[in-house]
Image (cartoon, helix red, strand yellow):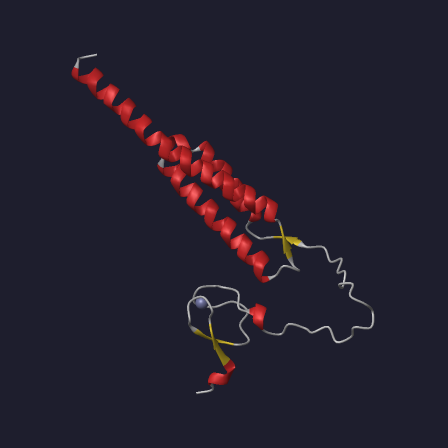
Length: 148
Ligand SMILES: [Zn+2]
């Protein structure tokens, strides 16, 4: 056993190798407490190192927004609306996790937020459609029974 090379995942508790950046069990980012480079020189004043690296859009940002919009479009069919909204919300959360884990690499919180909101709207509209469908089906059943 070489337990000193392993550390418990802060999210699920699984012992994972310290070299892992992501928990293989729950995919939570593990890096934030390790390998944080310390600013060794205070000579140049308190100005923060202005990295002007171009950030990448979080990998799920576009997907979450597209899924959120689709969930609104398909909310009238209820179940597709639910499914799209659930996946859209999940993709948004994954994107936020990616940004939290690598804030210097990823951006796109605005788009992820839009994905999260549109997914929520799609979910609400899907719920609203349930009584409307029941109403239509009831009307249709009555019409059938009345011989129309
Ligand atoms: Zn974990």
